[in-house]
Length: 324
Ligand code: PEP
Ligand code: MG
Image (spheres, rainbow, N blue to C red):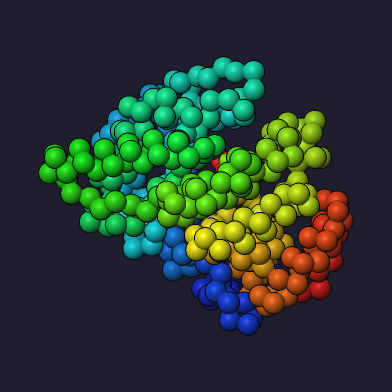
C-alpha cells in the first residue's frame, strides 16, 4: 500500500469527478524536505513561527528572523507561504519568556501576547516583510483572534512596519493577511472579520478544544476531545458555507485536515484548501483521488444528521472502508 501511495504522490490531488482540492503543508523547522514536496503541494498553509523560537536562548533578532523566514519563503517560492505570527502561551512556552497562569489556554496566548508586546510583533513583521522582498509569496496569519480590535491593531502595526521599511529604502508589497478561526466567538463575526482580512484559516485543534471545553492535552479528558463531535462538524460546515457567501477563501490547518475521513468531510463542506503535516499527505491525497466530490457532499449530509461522536466515527469508518 505504501508503494501505491508513494506512486500517487506525483498525481494531482483531484477527485474522480474532476474537483481539485489543493493540499498544503504545515511547517515549523526543517525545510530540507521542501524541494521534494514542492511539486506535490499548493504551498505552506501554516508555518508555525514559534517553533524556531522554542530552540533559541532568547528572542531571535530581526536579522536572525529574516534569515529564517527567507529560507521558508525561498524554498517554496513561487508557492504561497502562510506565516503565522508568534503563537505562544497555552501549551507553548518559550524557556526565556515563561508564562505562569492558572488557565493557560484561556489566558495570555497568541495575538494577546504579541499585541501586549508590540515591539516583539514589530520585529517579527519587519523580518517577514524583509524576507519576502522580491518573492512576494508571503501571507500573514493572526492566531487566537477573539475580536476585530485585535485585527485592527495588528493591521496598524503591519502598515507601520511597511512604512518604516520604506523609509529605510526597503520597498515591500503588502502581504495578504488572514485570521485563524479557532476561538468560537469568531464564528459569529465572520462578516466583520471579512471586511478586514483576505482569508480565513480554521484551527480545528483549538476550535475543538474551545467548543467542547476540553483541554486538548489533558489525558483525563482525552476521550471527550473529538473533532468529529457533531457540534464541531456543524460549526465547520457553517464556517465553510458562510465564508463562501462572503467570498472569503477558507482553509483548515488543524489535525482534522490531515485525517483522510476528516479531509473528505471538509472537501464536501466546501473548504478551499487543506493544510497538514507532510506525513499525512499521501493518505489524504489517496482518499481524495478515490472519492467524487458528490459523494463527499453526500457524506457530509449523512454525517451531520448523526448525534454522537461515536456514531460519526462508525459511519466514517464504514464509508471509508467501502471506498478503499
Ligand atoms: C489549531 O489550533 O488547529 C492550529 C492549527 O494551531 P495550533 O495547533 O498550533 O494551535
Ligand atoms: Mg491553534
